[in-house]
Amino acid sequence: MPHGDQDEGRDAGRHVSVLPKEVPALLVPPGRTPRRILDCTLGAGGHAKALLELAGTDARLVGMDADESNVILARRTLASHRGRVRLFHANFADAREVLREAGWDHCDALLADLGFASNQVDDPRRGLSFQQSGPLDMRLDRHSPRTAADIVNQVGEKDLADLIYTFGEERYSRRIARAIVSARRAGRIERTTDLAEIVGRALPAPVRRTRRGIHPAARTFQALRIAVNNELENLDALLELLPDALCPGGRAAIISFHSLEDRRVKRCFAALEKIEKATVLTKKPITPSRAELASNPRSRSAKLRGIEIR
Ligand SMILES: C[S@@+](CC[C@H](N)C(=O)[O-])C[C@H]1O[C@@H](n2cnc3c(N)ncnc32)[C@H](O)[C@@H]1O
Image (cartoon, rainbow, N blue to C red; front, top):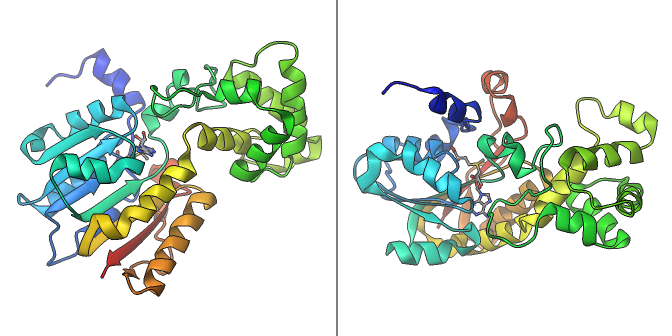
């Protein structure tokens, strides 16, 4: 099919799957082919496609994404496997309902590749990037009611500082919250770049200089994103249903991108192993190779952990 301008535009934010060999190797080990694969975070459908191809023609995949536009994107990627997939617009906190809807009691392999896809981060209209001017939105699911602008403009100073501290692990959270509250007295803060500037100015100059390579607003943006999308609560809900959702011998792979997520995954897996419900497959998390880091710098903070249910 010829590639017109439209296709090129679409490819500009094309998501490159992280750990593209490691994920299938973990979920489809030699000699054991999962027949029911659950992809909790379809994104562009790259992992889903690789899993289906490695698992062979007996495997079926049920997938979901909280972002409706990525369900559409994944459907396109998986077009050649149409008869073997069912895709849903759903939050993985509701994975049990999705399984039920698909007519499955359990699955044999489950993947959650957390966070955002490149097409979302690169679209200024989503408000996820402090480098591009866009509305302070940050919602994964555009049907959900609260945007980042609502938090930035409505939450009181102390709660805002706590939120930035807890979800952003930002030690200058109080200064930042004070600066935000002071700036919004002059009018609502609506744009990503305005917020980034306010945060940057709130940090002491030496700190701004020493945060080499990391944007001064990165932690604040992370905190808002987590809050807007209830990211940690959703992850907890998913982790809680793992032992039930997977059949004995079933495997789960979770890729996290920051320490708040990874800590939760690590603790949950260790707790399941302790009560002899599961075996941890990755004593240390699997991280991208040098070659992957060079070709896909966005993979740099990815950590993959795996577990097998007993
Ligand atoms: C890193 S991307 C996944 C990329 C995918 N594995 C691939 O190979 O193309 C993460 C995706 O998860 C979705 N997502 C994040 N949190 C979610 C949640 N709680 N429920 C469902 N989808 C979620 C995002 O909308 C995004 O499309």
